[in-house]
View 1 (tube, rainbow, N blue to C red):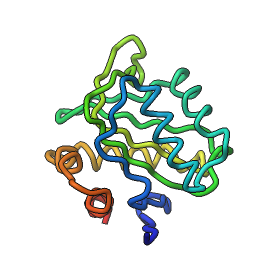
View 2: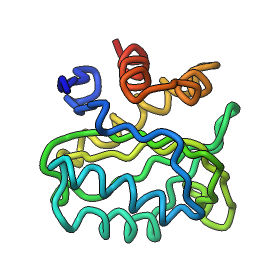
View 3: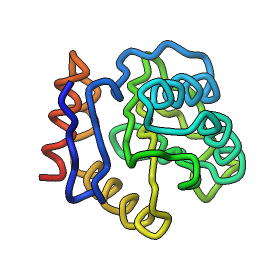
Amino acid sequence: MESTQLPNLQGMELRPEFVMLDIDVGSSTQALELIAGRLLKEGMVTPDYPAAILKREEEFCTGLKFDEMGIALPHTYPEYVIKPCIAIGVLRNPVTFRSMGMPDVPCDVEMIFMLGVTDAEAQLNFLKLLMSALRSSGKLRALKTCKTENELAELFKTYFA
């Protein structure tokens, strides 16, 4: 499938192969392992990336409650990433993450935006851009209702055009 670079997002790559719809898991750990495994299979991250994602999530929680739904923005250190990328997972049923900045507060998550960032300095700017784009009314629901991986990837790109 065609590779899509998102120039407004520090060249993060998004392909339909990085999108997973209707993920049926019972925990945040299972969801993270599944999505990280996809990035590994696609050659975007190192073999240590899945374990690094889980470890980082324990140290720095990534659940965020938006008006439309809860999301998670898991990421880890640049040394585990081969090429900058983003994977998107849409969960069949919400799973509980711990809230960013408030680890004692649970956050029911319906979508996961897993980041593979190779530049630690650009990571914060990227997260700000992503959160700003996703806060706009209707955008998360629109992503969640996409029927195909390609449709979701193409819609997501329009948020940063």
